[in-house]
Image (cartoon, rainbow over all chains, first blue to last red):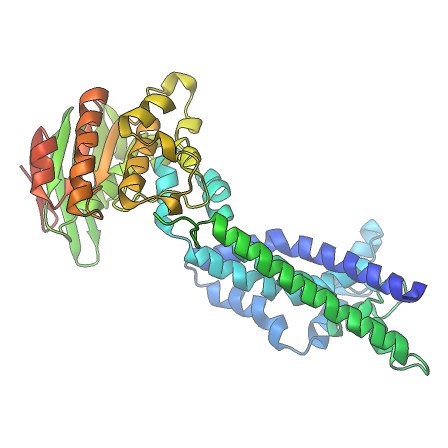
Length: 234
Length: 210
């Protein structure tokens, strides 16, 4: 059904989205918890910085990444010379570009989830001998689970669809950085590529739909477990 | 046993309390907004006073530059609406504090507490599947199983209707008689403290009086 090149793009997309989501998760939890719970003068600045990729043309973050982490970039050159690490034009760069673009979508639902947790539940836990980190792991995080699931799915889906920043930062190298969206774009520019472009477009729609349905089902289950929708009448 | 000398301000509200509490049940009555819950939050370590001290059995919990956080005070606190953890079963709620104790610190075991409060059949349920009265009994059991040195009760019956109140009061009385746990019982309903307390104090506009 799919040609080897298309399968490569699919596999690469999944790999990039997986690592980008994994990278965003701990950072997203930390950032959204901080935004939801702490009052700080730096809050507005952090908020703007986190949301910026959502409203900027995606090429701009990609270009900034290139300036910073490109092999001649400020940090990229140092990484390359000191450790032999090269990020630009590799799949790791694609992960980074996706992560930057998808991060706001991880933070938003998580932040809302943290803000909605009744603080007195955490207080109750602390009066039962739980240290702050134990309260966080045993009360805060489980109660934020629906938000975490929503954030993971949105982040993963957004990573799958990442185009502009990836194109600017790592280009479209088959087998290395050419994910599904880049492949579709590529196919639409070569004669006879329409069929492949269509197949990949349909695949994208199927994947995105599946992700949203899965998120919905997991969320419903989580809400039931958390007692938002009690089954029994009592 | 517990002696306090507290000065706490938040906005226009000021709470000043100076008292010694002994064993048995001390009832603290007062209208809503008089600072009763604030007093318990200060004792539990959920709030920090601007000045003053809290001493318990010779140990300074607050004052003179030291502040013992709530998770080290080993006081139990029962909230008005129970505050059971919605993501845990009744059993896991009950054992939440118990599991954090060294075996030597455990003065109460699960089964006797289930019997005392008659909540045995509820252990597999979730908090959302409990009635108001059941929820408060589980909340009492959860605090009790933490084997607190002092039990703070913040209007534990006020969210219940008269009929349920009358059902739960005997459990509290039984808890008092069987456990001999010192308790501070805060309420706006004098009938409850008349029934339970060995000593009654009043809270009025942020001031604690005999």
